[in-house]
Image 1: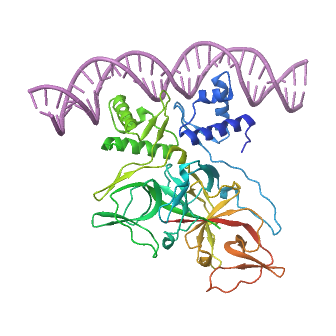
Image 2: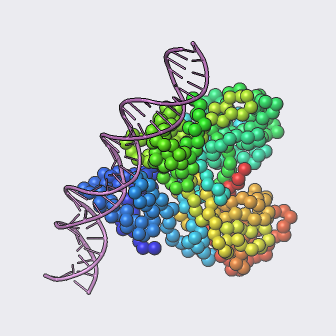
Image 3: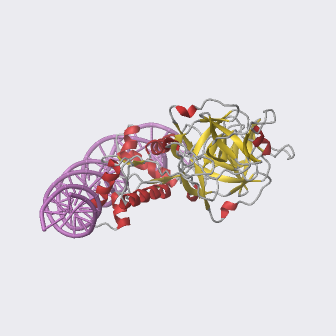
Length: 220
Length: 220
DNA sequence: GATGTTTCTGAAAATTTGTTCACCTGTCAA
DNA sequence: TTGACAGGTGAACAAATTTTCAGAAACATC
């Protein structure tokens, strides 16, 4: 693939950052302002170049409408033992994002996310279906879900969705986010900890579901 | 939070789907066409309603520019369950990427990645450090690593790096990628399966390390 | 120095898009 | 019955945005 010029790369990065932060694409004029071009056509030309080089797809006539190629960069290192990385097609992209904080999987705990947010990185892979962009990541604190194989220090990915009986949900109780299994029984709703040593929880009347825990990640 | 009407919900869903599939927002006229409204103002009113109800944020004057709240309003049994997603700062991005295929964690198995590559999605989060871009994802097949809590169907993220004694590595043997623990003992290198029922493996002389398994992911 | 390519300027045209105004229709509760 | 309100039509307007056109400046290449 033809290489990008410095400015083209910068513009591409800016567009990426813009859409990641604000959730919508910048207009040509936004880019013009950012790079202090005197003419919109300067941007226009760069966008054409980016499209010709295959990293960007414009939607003709539509405002703030693009499709963008995922980041690509390859360079492999040598190791003592022979090292052979994956082929280009196997490259996975990572992106730095906001990390929502910690979740109490045990008894109610303070939520780290109340203050400053840190950033984390997660690879791009998990299931073939499209994952909703409203998902977020939480670090698990506590051990109330160990019977579901979710342990202290793990990271769970919370996605929006209809909570069903048996789902593991991130629930907000008294301002605390907790991880529990949702049990619907006899018209009542319970939050159940997955730990034999914990008492059965009482039914809850009002409940804020932040989302469904769909993926668990563990650092080795 | 005020409840959404059926049409409002449908429009919100359509917008979500549109941005998820095409990566840019629909215009008011796109929505109009989708729902066969005779007037753009019908859409306009609904968008105003959605904004007033707090699930959508419009950017005044900007085309195809919105911020959207996570999915809304679940109800289960007769208990009130409010849905409240994370704040804007907690949103995590996902990206579609290549998926390297399957890895044999048991006895040598064929590698699915030999042929076509499929795409997967993974959230963005895992550790505070920056992850090298040469990483890739593999689906685990087999059960030889169950004692290390890596099971059939899990996804492991392989990163490049110096393989040390005790690391779990993705190793290429006879054209097959396998997942094993690397043991250095008395100047020799062994690949050890983490399963009491499996025999200790023989030492290997030549070995291609594809990378180190640093993260395990599991779908719930 | 000549030459071609990339990058940019400046202005204007064409189109898309959000927004407003006036008015109609049914529903539901006071 | 009346009034409020959600939901809709139809047309027009104003703004935002993309796109085009002609040409200048910078810059490497021969």
